Length: 459
Ligand code: F0G
Image 1 (cartoon, protein in one colour):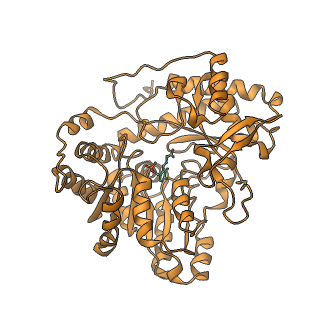
Image 2 (cartoon, helix red, strand yellow; image 1 turned 45 degrees about the horizontal axis):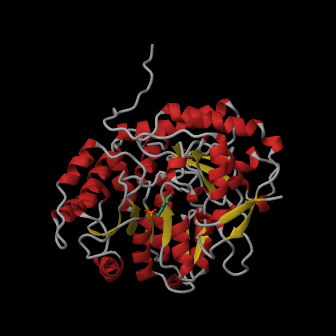
Image 3 (cartoon, helix red, strand yellow; image 1 turned 180 degrees about the vertical axis):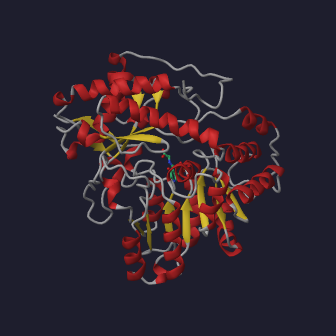
């Protein structure tokens, strides 16, 4: 008999989580103005709000923390991380930052001017925020297939190269400071980008003299999909694939809270010394001196170990198979989600799960609230609330998809927790005919409103 699959680690420290009653949760979510971000974490049983900074560090990472060098300038921990970035990602120049958006802020301060265009595949919301804040445009050129949740496409995060070339042809070179390639494509469902697509995008960048920026938050998960799905890569190690992926890029930003499995941290890396130099002053102004950039020495040490661990096949197999497991459980109840299962999350297709809620009443948010009330599970809306208003018309933007993202923290929950999530969703799905009303906004910020929005039940 074939042996069943099991995790490639065992558990050394645990953290208690609390159950609650439906009556308590109804009260708590009301007090939170129906914004899941406003809930105390103690009010959450299974927290799938994000996979960012929520993973469990390894014994190797914790022990590396004890060896942190906390010198303000020239710390050993900085050189250790710099060497690891060079070895694993292949970049000679690097600047630390306290998290991904801080790296974006520094890099974009150096390269973006008002009126610029940055095409790419579904820019993450802080990336889009940093671009739009500078009165530039984040232009989404993701392949059309990504908008159809039931299509099984192996690299659904890809850039539509025909669309991209049209953009590169249309605008003068000086208007486009970079193409932003996000691996995996978070917004489209944690969907990977193929090596073939990375190469094709890089070739277009070369042809039009535009820089290629990789937003690398989940680069290791992307490499796993290349290894397991793309012809020609099955026999390559994850580390070899990672080196190849980055060999096509001019620079990268990294939220180390994802695929470097740390609770806080980030960096940017560059092929050219010139780019590195143009970012240094922004690092010093906003983050800290260039050899710590907002991180402590111990954080940098843990990050370096995390980069090494996340680029090991066994770790990635355990990780991705857990996400797949949740997908398979949802299949048993015919609950529709962005197929195939993503790298870090399952994105439930809220329009199909709650067909009677009008889009003006925020379908995916409504599903998120229902799931929380059902079982204390917290997901996050990836829909009209997150899409913000159009910067010019100030009208609500309604994206093609309304998704509820269930992001799975790394090495944190067991498959029993996934079973609870699946059954809770089934219970909501079973009473979908009765869920006809959503929520309306009572307070919102002009940009990135979903973090702080306040809502009330629609009557
Ligand atoms: N890029 C991508 C693709 C991301 O998913 C994130 C963060 C960032 C950049 C920004 O990094 O949080 O370290 O400042 N994503 C988190 C999420 C918050 O929940 O998906 P950060």
